[in-house]
Image (cartoon, rainbow, N blue to C red; front, side, top):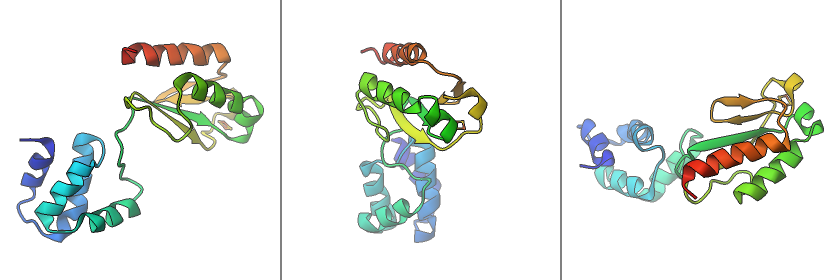
Amino acid sequence: MGQIETVLQRFQTNTRDNLLPILQEIQQETGFLSEEAIIKVSGYLKIPTSKIYAVATFYDQFRFTPRAKYRIKICSGTACHITGAENILSQLEKRLNIKAGETSKDAMVSLEISQCIGACGLAPVILVNDTFYAVVTAEKIDEIVDFVKGTSGN
Ligand code: FES
């Protein structure tokens, strides 16, 4: 039995009230809401897929693409901006071949811009998952990209 079926089985009553908890559990188990998941939930609860998408997109908590293994966030607050966040972003975009807001096709890495993360004295800063990098330089970015690419097997 697949992960989605296992989640559905936990909800004995297939009433519409269970839509949100079911979507939350599926995302928790699989990391995102795939098209396959939406179709299965639609069949189980007898709710059209269009309605499920309408509900799910209303809430920020749901993702429709897999979460990247390495999520890189670049701070774009004033201090980071002044100290070169833009150059860091373009270096990352070039080397990873994705733009801000995108995830690589193999779901290894995603790039995001964030607001000030409260470490302005250490600008420019980036986060890779929960790891914080302060006063990042072009060399440091190269090292991070080499590491990410090295673990993807490319
Ligand atoms: S501006 Fe980047 S941490 Fe505050």
